[in-house]
Structures are given as structure tokens and as C-alpha cells.
Length: 82
Image: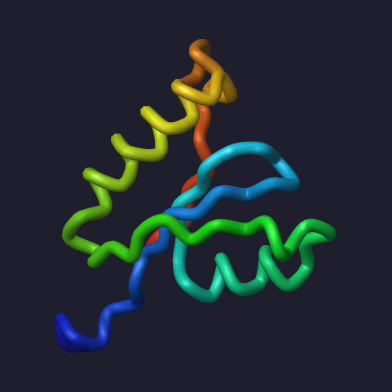
């Protein structure tokens, strides 16, 4: 798999769980399709696999601002290609 062929990582807002998530494009599409609030799914960013650390920091901060981050275990949803 060349660098150009690597799957993209997305960051989105999941209205069902009321949190920001990061994962593969296919995960985003599956969750959106199965959501009762699919029209409220907001795609925020598309990241390369090399920028996954930045994505982790970003969704952690977004969830902290929303007050949905579990401070005890630094909870956030994650599913990306490595």
C-alpha cells in the first residue's frame, strides 16, 4: 500500500453519543447510515494517517470543551488506520 492509498481518518461529531470521534472514513459512513440522527453528523476534518496524533489531541480537546470527556480515563472514541 503506497502512502497515497492509505485510508483517510476523519474527525466527526456523533450526535447519538454527543461526542467527537475519530476513525476511518468507512466507520464514519457506517455510523452515519445507522444513526437515528444521521442529518446531524458533522464531518470536521480529514486527516492522513501521519497526523493521527494531532487528531487524538484535537478530539480530546473538543470533548473536554463540550464537557463529555471522562477525566478519569481520558475517554474518547477512536478507530484509525495505522
